[in-house]
Image (cartoon, rainbow, N blue to C red; front, side, top):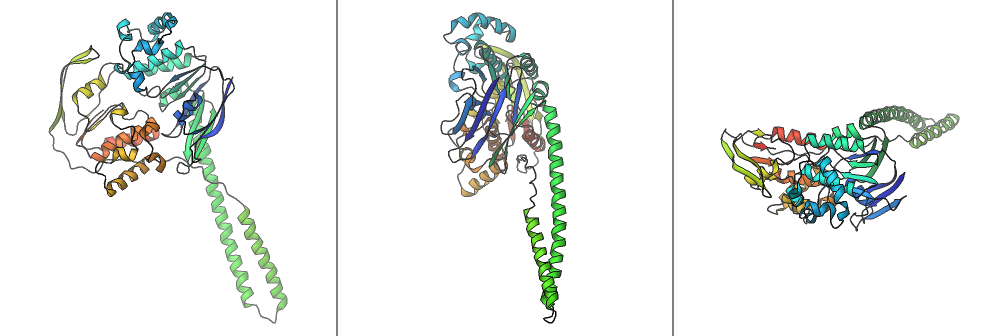
Length: 465
């Protein structure tokens, strides 16, 4: 058994991850869930001791020599520039024999030439499998996976489910993918930021995802209903007390001086009434359970576009890194079209979009192409720089559940979900006649995904996803 204790605070003392201890056993499939920016990725980085050095991290492990296999949410530019061979084995050539075995099991279509390709040339699903092969080559004791389903197709998700279920070593994974959570997790750790993102709350649940969701809903519903009943009862008691107080006070004010004995009795009664008030004040009613609210984002109202051709796709040959992906891609795109581009990982979906469309109204899958990671969310979204524009951007970011500190934090230090929300906001602020979205809901929670789906359904321009 491995015991991990983690707590994280900002330099100003705000809790990003409330201190808690997690025991991890063989066979555990521990899912970490929660909204964007609640500290999930930060928790994994803290376990690995690679969190931002400016943060105060409280960290202890029962077995300090534990080898962790880590699948990062985003690969660094340094890793993306490496060849697959260099990334997988580096100078440790003794791994080569095992590499052939794992490639045959998980990437059977790979040949020796593919190992010389740069990591940036592979699809999202291929990168996930390459990272998992690297973890297997490391002979890890525990696997830490940060949003492993973000860039993968359904077949790869099914493969990943089978892989997680087959592991006897513990797997700790962050995911917003309901299917993966339902099919693999046997323990849940829920990260929340309540009270307007001022308090970190961690809930550890022993059981499946569906059981957790059902029990949580029942607990919150029952608790909040009891609080409402208690508040209603106390309001009635206070109302009766006020009437009694007013009656006694009125009699005290009108009692005749010729009846001092009645006056003494009324004063005693008033003392009893006042003691009742103190007793009511001492009776504390629990607060309702504070739940995180959904984000809010929508396009401005647009003029109705007449049916006309806006764009076209005309690609005779689609290639990447010298490899041909396909031929003869032709499509006329008209206003009001909502086009979904489907296909397995590695077939060229993102490559086609990047080859055909410019960046102005394009949300790329790689957020580095949408955002300046050295700038804050505010500065990424501001165009003209006027005071009114700045106020509008701040209000939008508030609706996307950014705190004031997060609004002014460089994008490189924010979560993948927060980068996705700023990328979408930049498009919304342009009020575009058409939008091209490459995996727009990756990194977003189910709660946020519902909002984005509604926003896209109501969009009056041309949409390609």
